[in-house]
View (cartoon, rainbow, N blue to C red):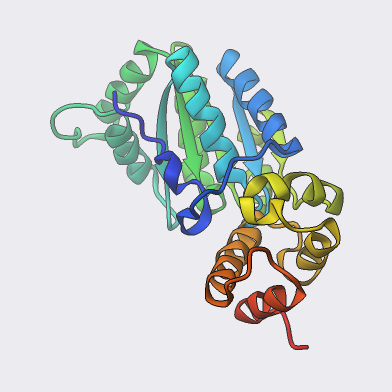
Amino acid sequence: MTSQLPPRETDHYTQLADAAVVTTRALLAARENIADTIDVRAMMCLHGPAGVGKTLAANVCLRELEGTRGEEVCRIAFRARPTARAVRHELFAALGLPGEPPRHPSEFDRLLLASLAAQPRTLVVDETQWLNRETFEYFRFVWDHPYSQIAIVFAGGEGAHTVLRKEPMLSSRIFIWQHVTKLTLEEVQQVIPLYHPVWARTGPTDIAFADRHAAHGNFRNWARLTAHTLTALERTGRDHPDREVLRWAFSRLGSWSG
């Protein structure tokens, strides 16, 4: 089955050229947590604020498992409050089942349960903060089935943890909770010079200056700042960012008024 994970070139915001995947504490923890969850066919929740690298960490780790273990990963995402019917149809599509979806819920459930029992799979449920009780109950139903061979990774923003905790029948079954947070200044100093070549030529005080005024330990902010910094260097002919270049980049992010 063709991988449902997005291609590597889309990992970084705006598909930033020459950006590297850097090994942060959160990425190392995600690699271990996802592997452990899959080993026992359990459920986990990966959550945190926007832009801190949750999706990248999940994609990187799951690609490794697809490659090394042959784990089949099925990805499901919702953009609104879904119903159990919507979950059935999303699962039908993600599992690549042939023919037309059954019309009756009981028949649909039998088909899905048979497919989920046929072989080991990992379901990645993105944007978990959009889910509701009916949806969570359906995921609990298919995971609880004695013959299911699925692991589930719920991923989402800060609200994901809150909505899951409100459903004790499901949250009590979560094997691992991982909260991804912004980078500390120490982590920024360690990983940002490895993240993109432009920062490898930048001194630690200027990197700290950039983080304090614009990036705030957020990888998406660092990607945006990097893109604008590269534009500034190209237009000025400079070979590394100085404070003047950084201030110009900050102005594009709306984070500099001086």
